[in-house]
Image (cartoon, rainbow, N blue to C red; front, top):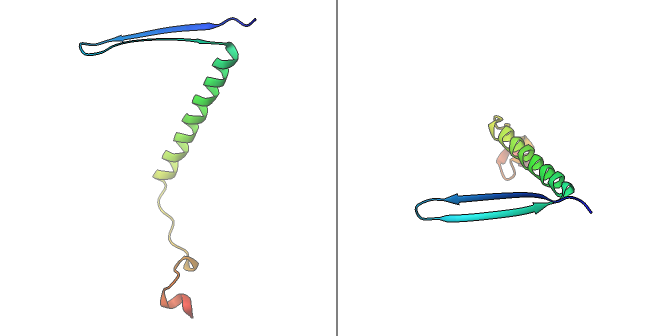
Length: 70
């Protein structure tokens, strides 16, 4: 039997009180780490694509323009 990893967290403010507990196996921790890494890598790719200057339109993309009918 694999050992369970346990974590506890609590948050208390003037309007809110919350407590959470989780138990995860080492394989589950590895899976969670892989999911977080994939999310961060995907976010980095989106930011990189958003910062890239837009490409000029190709001539073949201008459907319906008078020049494309010639």
